[in-house]
Length: 367
Image 1 (cartoon, rainbow, N blue to C red):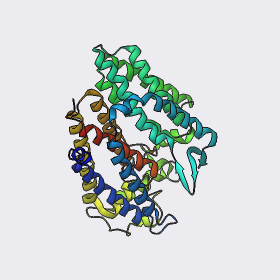
Image 2: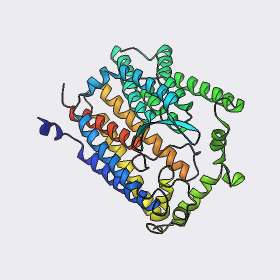
Image 3: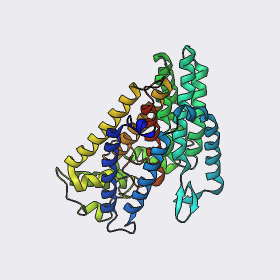
Image 4: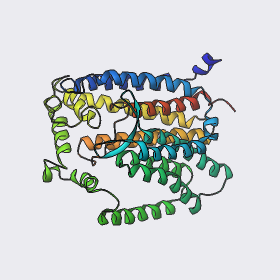
């Protein structure tokens, strides 16, 4: 029975993901070789192993059952975010993790993203199934569903993770049948409210506002808000066509490039493997996204398509923002590069999301 199910498993998608994961482990090993974080690649391998096991387990659970408990999981996710405020560990001024003991930490905001994908899929599926147009009341409810946990994560503060909730909302509204007029009004309202919030200084903290503007002219504040982007641009540019080779990056090994094993791992990879290596990584991401879209198109029902497109939307958003940040086209927001950046919560979330994608693919011929 199980063997017949796994016959429809997307082994090609998994192969692309595993190749990227191997690249991640090797780059983390190189980026931390001369630092106090040496050995983090071994922890990354443990995270990958846990994620892969979780992926296979969740692929065996009918995703319709996951949709049935989506609202309950949403309530638990809000409780977990409250728990971060109450008992979370504070690191560098941010309270984002819950200490599990033994050096292990859990970041609830990562798994909340997966819950939001399921909740949004169920919410918009009910609207599509009813055959009615998306109303302003529906749009308001959708904004509330995503907006509450987004505001709670932003309060931690964690601007990067909170922004990754937005693609879930956008994908849901698009697939739920939002009209151009409604989209235009929403975009105008967001632009006006966002502008007012940024100018008043109440929406973001001063260092967050500095990050959002410094990327346009990093040389204006080389030692503070513009430092990270300047060092990243130097690392990317110095890699040239073929790169300097593993363990030979002057910016990375010289400890000039900040946190090269997490937020700026792409810059470290570009310095060591050059333009050719960067194109290879981008190609892998492209192939993963193509496979996700193909699986969404062949899903057995609308909720399956909604879930997969939610996963693809978040993945694309994270890739675009992180790589854009490394090459000076996006502000520094702390969004990790999926499947490459070091981090247990991020890796496990990604494999659980892929497990649900596999789940949907394996049931695409079930009526």
